[in-house]
Amino acid sequence: MTDDTDAYARRTILRGAALGAALPLLPTAAAHARTPSPVPAPGSASLRWLGTAGWRIDTGGRTVLFDPYLTRFTTGLFEKPFDPTTEIAETDAELVREYAGNPELILVSHSHWDHIADVPYIARTTGARVLGTETTFHLLVALGVDPLQISVVKGGEVLDFGRGLVVEVVASLHSRNKQHSYFAPGTLTGPPATVPATISDLPEGDTLAFQVTAGTDGPTLFLMGASDFSERSAEGLRPDVAMVAVPSSTSTHRYVPRLLRALGRPEVVVPVHWDNFERPLRDPVQADPTMDLAGLIGQVHREAPGTRVVVPDYRTVYGADLRPRR
Image 1 (cartoon, rainbow, N blue to C red):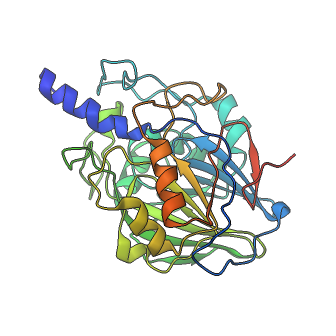
Image 2 (image 1 turned 180 degrees about the horizontal axis):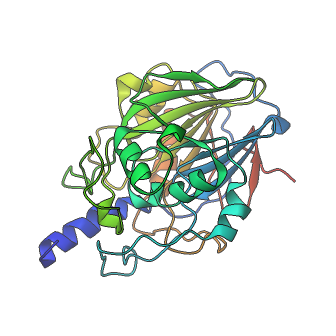
């Protein structure tokens, strides 16, 4: 990025990573477009939003993390100017202990910094198995993760981790900006030339979604890391809960209607990836007011009137039914 035009384009693309404006828990409408499935018991799992696309899922004494970006740092994305040479911050060990626990699995959708930056530290210190793309594999190995801890996946795998914990890998897509492009494309088929040190050293490397069945009596959760998807890959998944990334533009044709139809109009939709992820995770959620979270929620209610929409916050622990736990 060497001139103002390129810098502006990159900033515009990247603003898609921080989405929406905070809204309260929304009630369930009376009508529903599908036959409701049994709602999981509140105590069968607990869920906590880690901001951006990230989640912590606890079930049966086991912890699964998805895109855990905890040690936030400033790149200029929200307050300008954006600096692609920003160094990847050292992980805050205390914050990881507080929010990440002792995970058995870490699921990584793609390799941009707001999804992967804390994964090397968490994997090295906990021994957790990481599921991700080949690009994610090469980046993590370069950052000191044991290659034997990493399972390379592409989409289509249905992986059984025992005691009802099942992870289905779903081929997916990264979100697009108004120019129908996205930030930092590229894949790695071998080790990077140098150890990644800045956010520009972390290419997208293809994008995955995951469907997690959280234990024998837990919910089925569809987890997105970016606001686009492969309709044919998502067709027929039928999760109880869908964590849906808010889009940064209208470049993806009929994003919400197509996604909800493919997923069978889930019982609960949780908008994600709409927050300012350069503020500390211990602070209250701050939304990016340029993104239309309310518009996404309105589309969900039009397309699936009986779907309950839950707008999460950092401090609440949710039950398997996505209602706050005491």
